[in-house]
Length: 421
Image 1 (cartoon, rainbow, N blue to C red):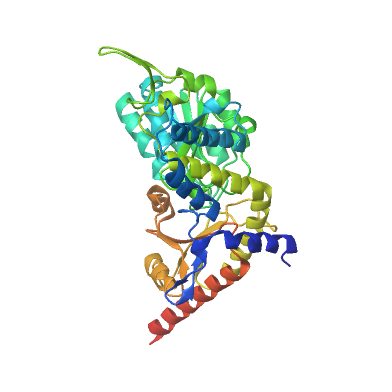
Image 2 (tube, rainbow, N blue to C red):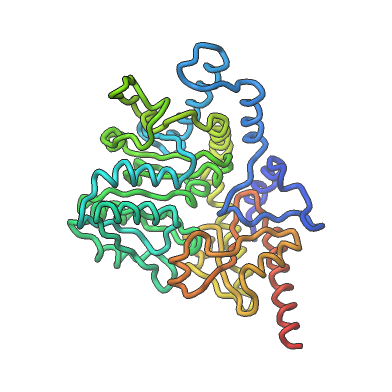
């Protein structure tokens, strides 16, 4: 039985998302591609529009009213993000275009200068390409060695293997908090202390965790954390890097240009204080302001409430998928209450390729993802070329999951009948 309070959460928020109230291919839209990008509430859309309609001006150093208003709103989001993840200082929040840029910032600013030949970087096979390729660049240029944690047979982070890879040469552990394909949660409460014990720094990719659960960087004790705004009900083109203050202070600038300077001569420049030394050029002002509105929206709902409701949705999704013949699910099963994994399910079927499946289900107005989800090495490890993925958010309902399950079952039965003929 689904708790009444949880039903209330879905019903109270759906009116806030205009995009959900449309038909696709003659059917009401069912959006189950939230791991790729989330939808935006009216408050976020309005914040972006209000900036361009009323306060459009460049930030910082402007003397006029519009610039001051834009700067105040832009910097207010930094405070909101710091509070949202419990950073110890607003200076620990650096705006980036997305999580990919945030990882590249750490790779080029810290990695290229701090790592030398023979130093070891531990990643996992289930990393998003954004947390693989920058470290490949670093390894190629510095001579550092990449090591990888493979998932367990049940599709979880292999803590035992991770411990075996650690050594006094380990300088960095860069790891996903929640896998966008397997849905498993990395046991960061164990991984981070173990890494620190050998003197390694830890970067946490929180793209798939920060929209769905409370995050406390001080409790986690990670050295860096990255996230993308578009996955947490904010606009595209804005993300952020969290870094411990002393660590960010020790890192050289990543990009040069306006905004990141203190004083410039023809031969030499000095750099702005944190966080501005990492924010070269005119930033995504409207997007940052709208991200602040997204943080307000999520905070008002309560991340504990969001996590609890999505756990119920996850349990409902897995219960339904387990009753359909010919489905192979990847990653760990959720616990009885739906916790212990992300609110997504990646799967394959015996009869239909993932791309065909997604295309056919779209004819019923249901949006799911198909492909390798920017985790090609993981898919090679799983020995599949592509998976289909249904991913949930707090504005989804149990009825929408049922519609997806029905469309999936009908599609598989149709293909079975064609094969029989």
